[in-house]
Length: 96
Image (cartoon, rainbow, N blue to C red; front, side, top):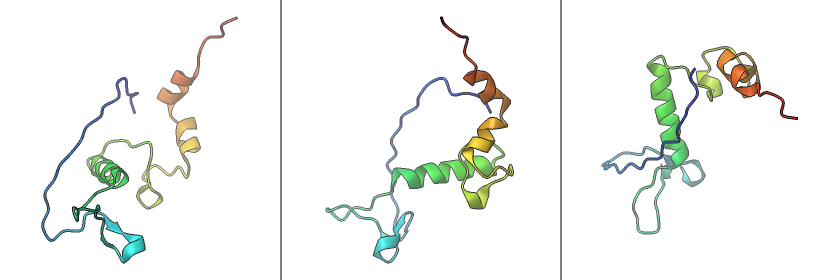
């Protein structure tokens, strides 16, 4: 896993008919809508879909859901402690 050097922001506009990409569990799993009646997909849903797709393509993912964990680590701390790239980033010289 390599370290990210730059932050990447983006926005996406999609059109869907007869679809429920992000159902609201507190509202009978109906599509989430804003006050104008337009559907909304949460940022968390989009991140999960991208993360799952990358994981399906064989990319290493640091934040994994419990049902899609493919490296055997049960927490982020264990995953970080066993990653050599992250260990080297955490070591900083002492400045007196």
